[in-house]
Length: 512
Image 1 (cartoon, rainbow, N blue to C red):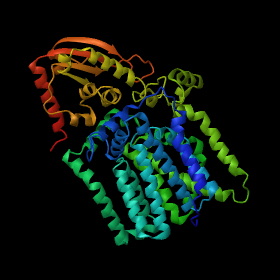
Image 2: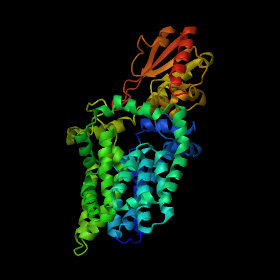
Image 3: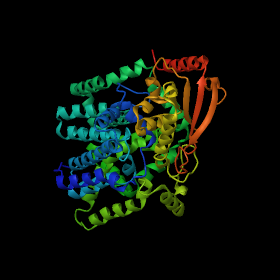
Image 4: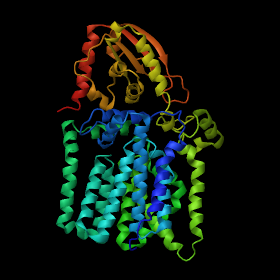
């Protein structure tokens, strides 16, 4: 397992493919995905934390705004982080003694399965997976060299992982337990280990302080997820999904797991993988929270297959061809490569619903995967909303707010809206958008964006003189199908008072 040299021409070639895939394969009819609007808006409201997630990704959103704030400038980060993750995976392979073939098959692992979809979306997962992989790379380098700089780099990688997605705690816990149970436990007696911890704590402290100042919204967010999504998860589905997400390269990472178990000094990495899975199941984590641990197994799998084929090399091109052949049929499930009509027809013909890939959070099967349906309808909603807003007299516009039920609607109107006046009117009390609503909100008229008419117990809406349904989203493939644009006219003073009191009460939940 003596480290070898990275095969840079090969690695950069694979990284270039990884970077280009989403731009080449995805149909241009699809728009940004619901969550991408949120992360972009976070970047326009810089802070040390947000109600849903850590802030690091949002800083990249700010840079995208400097570059024009387009779909391309956001997707750029997903592709770039995907390519960088592939590079680091190949570097791990070299550290494990893998030469060009091993590096090739490990790198190809990032060109398949769930990584194709993940690295096409501007979401925290792209940074999460990257920093899991980087942290493991530097930890392996430290164990090989005993250089303190590599230990500090591991700590920094884990700390930046915290700033990316809080699920890094599963990796931290798994590595801590795995190292404690391994021959490497001597590290716990070294001062530099605690110095590295201190560096990590100092890096994450600003976000911890923000969390404290806002009454720990991460706990509130996890409770909300548990009530709306995580309660439907179970261990058998989680384990099944681990194989489905990595189907074309299952034989690679399983080989890697076996190989690590056979090598005493690396056995703790196999233990860390198993612990991550157990902890995620116990903690109710989503299936894709584990994606950051597999690049390490791809690297080990590459080294394993290199060792097992050292005398007879003919299986090597067969194995690489097998991965490619297994990947191609699944591409329409990983990226929206065709228009919705064609995709829906393809899924129906292939019986895709039978494997659960068309099941949404409502536990029902639909014509498209939820992620793809969440990339449609936003422009239609924005165009219709802005057209109606522009049809109003200037005197009415001045007293209008545009209230959206959720951050996807609000974020899309702000992203795709053409005029600053229109965009500046958009608010929602959903997620971090709540904290950005002005304290002294004032309005006489309200454009409501939501799925259904507000209920009678939503008292603010009972204090308008007139209500008119203007339009709705009609794209049948969109998850936003049926979202309505409703105009509420001539609010009385009670409406404004109730709105202010309600918003202030909601904000107090996150204020000390």
